[in-house]
Image (cartoon, rainbow, N blue to C red; front, top):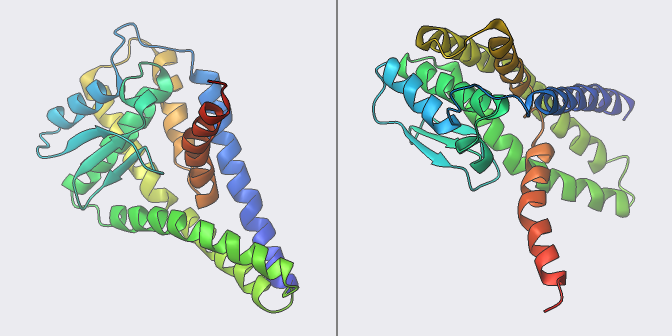
Length: 229
C-alpha cells in the first residue's frame, strides 16, 4: 500500500505542477496580442500551407479535448476561444497543433503514441475516479484501492514519458513561425513560445481535461436552469 501511495503522490505532484504551470503562463499572456490580430485558425492554416501540407481540416473543438490533432482523421481541433482568438495563448495552441500536423506529415511515429496516451487518459480517468470512491466507501482500502492508485499513477507517468513528442511538435512549429516571420520583436516570440512550452505539460492527467469540459458544459446549463422564467 505504501509504495502505491508513494508513486501516486509523485504522479499527483507532477500533474499539479504541469497544470498550474500552464494556467499561470496562460494567464500572464492572455492579454497580449500581435498587431496583425491574426486568429488561431488563420495562423494554423498559414503554417500548413507554408509547409505544403494538404488535406488537414481545422475545426472548432466541441468535445472534452478541444485543442487536439487527430492523425487518424487529419483534423486539428481548436477550442472556440482559440479558433477565433487573437491573443498569445490562442496563437500558441493553434501553432502547437499545427506542429503535430507537421510531425504527421513528416512521419514522426511517436505522435501516435502521444495521441493515444492522451485519449486513454481521458477515457480512463472517470472510471478510475468512480472505482476509487466506491472502494473507499466500501472500505476496500487494502485491496482494490491501491490498484486504482497504481493505475492512475502509471497513466500519468506514461503521459510524462511522451512529453518529448509534444516538445518536438513545438520545435517544428517554432521553425515554421520563424519562416513565416509572424513576430515583429523578441517579446512577441517569447510570449507565444512560453505558452507553447507550458501546453506540453497541460494534459498529464485526464481529470483536468474532464473537469474543464464539465465546467464548460454542465455549469452553464445548470445556471440556465436556475434562472427564473
